[in-house]
Length: 105
Image 1: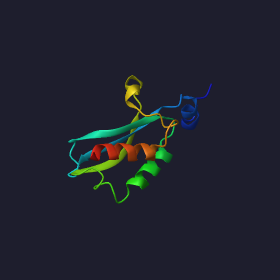
Image 2: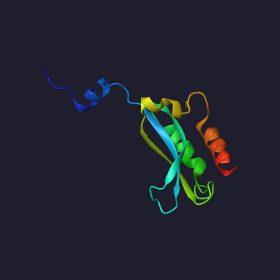
Image 3: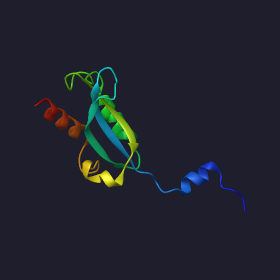
Image 4: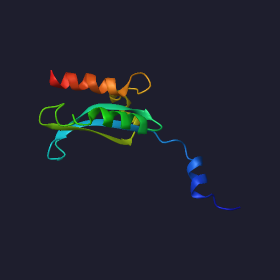
């Protein structure tokens, strides 16, 4: 019996679940900051990641005073599911706008 190729091996693995983290960090890119929004789980994050990045373009340093807002993706931790907004129930960009409005208030 032959060994599966890398592609065949990847296809046989269950889909991983990922999440997007929208974070506000000090402008010096230190680790001092906080997460504004957790969105997930996803099987693919690229569409909302691109949409959120485009929505932040040119505004990432002005949305939260003294902070740079950015989007990153990471594995979804099921034990923290209560912290996440479901990307299939709401628009990620609308969620971002609502959270930023709340952070400014």
